[in-house]
Structures are given as structure tokens and as C-alpha cells.
Length: 87
Image 1 (cartoon, helix red, strand yellow):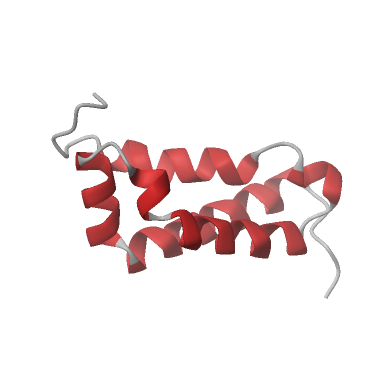
Image 2 (tube, rainbow, N blue to C red):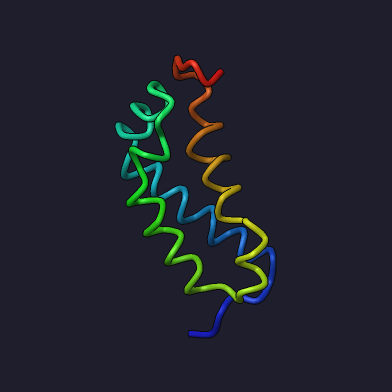
């Protein structure tokens, strides 16, 4: 399978991976937001997703941090209703 070579496709892949993380780890995400410890609670899952993303996109697209932005948008911002000292 050829590597993704457009920014739009790279963003879509990053968001799809982050959405899957959100879907399958809702309880851990809420716990992580509440305790301001999300990146420790989900470190394995986030790094597994990062490895998948890195393996599917060209290196110059990986450097643009689309994956990290998707993690923030989908895992953190979407939980702004959860009581946390982060807010």
C-alpha cells in the first residue's frame, strides 16, 4: 500500500485513529481528563496509534503533527464537559 502523500489524507487518517481511540477507550479518557493524567493513562494506546500513523504517511507529513492535533481535538477538547482541574 503506498504511503499517504497529501495533507488532507494525512489529517483524515490522524482523525480516524484518534476517533478509534476515543470510541474504544471512553472510560479511560474520562478518567484521564478528570485526573489531568490523560497522556499517562492512554500512553500505550496513543503510541500504538502514532506508530500506525507514522507507518502510513510520508515522513514530511508525519513531521507536521497532524496526529498530535487530532489527539487534542478528539480526545481532549471533546471532553470539555468533564469536570477537571485542566479547565
